[in-house]
Amino acid sequence: MASLTTLALSTPAGASIDPSWHAASIAALPAGGSGVYQGYLPFLSCPASGYCVAGGSYAAGTNQAGLLLNEVGGVWRAPTVATPPGDAAVASGASVSLYGVGCGAVGNCSAVGTYYDKSNNVQSFVKSEVGGRWLAATKITLPANALQTHQSSQVHSIACRAAGACSAVGTYEANATPTANIEGFVVDEVNGHWQSAREVTLPAGTRGNPNVTLNQVACATSGNCSAVGSYIDANNITHAIVVNEVNRTWRPAISVALPANASTYAGASLSEITCAAAGSCDAVGTYNTSTGVQGMALGESRGVWRRAVQLQLPSNAAVNPHVLFFGFQGIACPTPGNCASGGQYIDASGRYQGFLINEVGSRWQPATALSLPAGARQASKNGGVVAVSCSSTGNCSAGAAYVDAAGLYQALTINEVNRVWRAGVPLTLPANATGVGIYGGIYSIVCQTNGSCVGIGSYLDASSNYQGFTVSAS
Image (cartoon, rainbow, N blue to C red):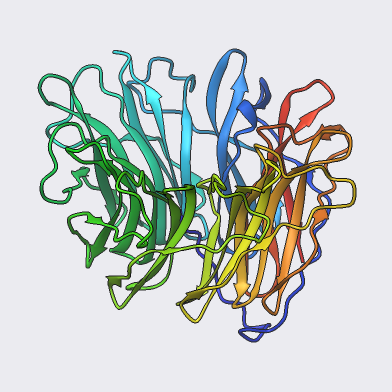
């Protein structure tokens, strides 16, 4: 999911920026909400400084409901319930999951998610904000070959580049014999109207159930987007794919050319993507070599995707580093060929660590190990770098999680200044926090060109319930 940023004229492009992160504030929940559902508050989009939309899920009794938060003029407003369409099993919003938010302009945003209809099908929906007002949600019309019963669709990501102009991607179950196929879909909003979804055309030679996954979509301009994910071919090999939209026409998926050391059964997939300009995008993911799961990145130049390259991990990485990208907002490219990203790996002692890595002039540099506070044990299994955003080339911020000396998960912010990643600083959580827990932490960050940043995430309170937080830097 790509987030828009608005250029601020007060700071020259490329100027050194070292944001100062403030203490986190509790994110308000709707009436009857007991906490953030499993710590899930991952989505953030900010079309201008002080104007953001965040999304996730909250617990309402035993139900899971959709949560939307609006920041207006630097102030977070009362929350909005992402109520599903009228054919939902429970109209109040039970069993609703959000999977992305995007803003094309201030007050003009959209959120996508899933819900159970009255026939117990899982349907995908979109809920749009127009002129600062959230409208009723609408069901996404799936391709004509979609199952009418026992459907389990899921919209995975959304990107918006102008008011009323968004694109989303997901998966659905298509009619096939003897069992349904899992196919990918793309869907566009044109002039404020959502079109019917279209099936993604896979590379030639695909047979059987392709088990498509589309993880993220990013748009450089309206109608010029790219989505990433994977599919399984007839030989049971998992391929990483890119799907490009050019001038509002979605082209067939492209199977990614992997690094030369990829194994035959590479199990490749792309997790995250961002676009700095039309025809210039970058993506990160993982693949298998003979020694284990490695990280890879690939870039697009003038509309042509290059061969993926293996990412060089810190020197303490294990032979099988089990590289992981969390799949939220973990890659940012302020200018074409100049990016920052981060994730998780296992070191030679078997401990989970975080890493940060930069692309400079279209070449990925060796990764930097996440610097942890004194006494910290490791990034741990649910830790490492999750969120990355850049205010300008070489000036970025990241959010991470780690385990402290007491064995508790905590959140960490890290700034990059002039291409140098500084030591991480623990995030000051709300007063009732005991840590961020295994499901919490900083999920997303958006930094503007004036050096201000906004982040969202979740933490554990004294009653062991997850609560949401917002945080800013200036």
